[in-house]
Every structure is written in C-alpha cells, then in structure tokens.
Amino acid sequence: MRILIFDPKIAGVSGDMLLSSLIDLTNSLDEVLELEEVINRLDSCRKFKVNVVERDAGIRAKGLEIEIEERKLANPSEFKRAVEFVVNHMDLPERGAKWSGM
Image 1 (cartoon, rainbow, N blue to C red):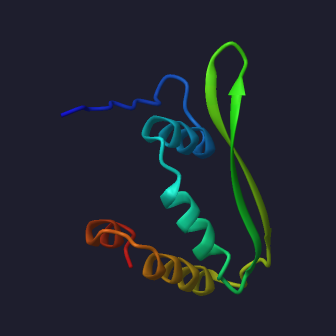
Image 2 (cartoon, helix red, strand yellow):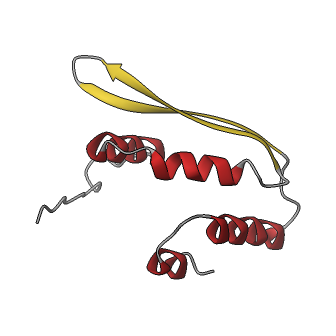
C-alpha cells in the first residue's frame, strides 16, 4: 500500500495546484473530464473548459487552465440545486455522494 501525506500548513496550496498535481500523480484526467461534461449541462453554465498543460520552469509539473462563462446564481437554493445536479450526474461512489451532503 502506498500512502501520500499532504500537509499544506507551511506554504498553502491553491485548488488548481492541488488538482493538477493529483492529475499528474495518478496520470488520470477521466474524472475531471466527466465533471467538465456535467457542469456544461447546468443551465447557469455557458462554458466550462478544463485544459491540462505541461509546465517546466526548472521543475516539471502539470498546470490547469480553466475557462468559465456563467450566469451568476440568484440565491443559495439555486446553488444547492446546481450542486445536487452535479452530484447526481457524476459517477461518484456512495461515500463521495454522502460526503457532499446531498
């Protein structure tokens, strides 16, 4: 069994940095592409595009470029419905769906 310990207390990490490093580590983009497809089906989303790029500034890494064109949601209940839609249309394990609170 392999274990990865992630402790961002010292320097912190942004969401796109964490996601791109996990994509690089697992060499799998399938879940991100599935999420892209589901988000693009939301009424409030005009465009959601994820692009993984190679970076090399002395250290090789992957980076994420995310394009979003959206209509702002009117209220928290509309946001909750959007999250429920995504959770219900993703192929999540039961544990992941429960963790989302939906």
